[in-house]
Amino acid sequence: MRAIDTYTLVVELEGPTGYFLHLLAVTATYPVPQHSVETHGAAWTNIETSSPTGRSGWKPGSRISR
Image 1 (tube, rainbow, N blue to C red):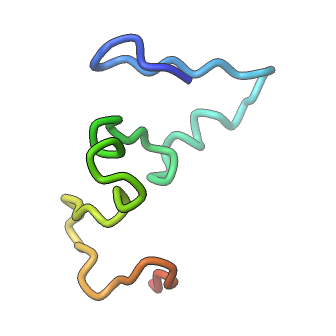
Image 2 (image 1 turned 135 degrees about the vertical axis):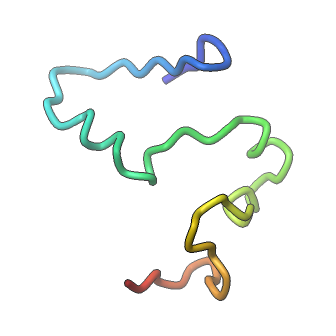
């Protein structure tokens, strides 16, 4: 996987993967800006998001309930 410019991410698969596009619909597979990881190091996952539900009360390592 590599970014060829600001808006293009290239993913090369080892073989045909019919479900790959479905995987991309899962938020866990969204690309993360490199500058966020470089700036915050291992704590980059603690950055607040623009999620409508927010993350208040969530602690790293805990489960997310429905």
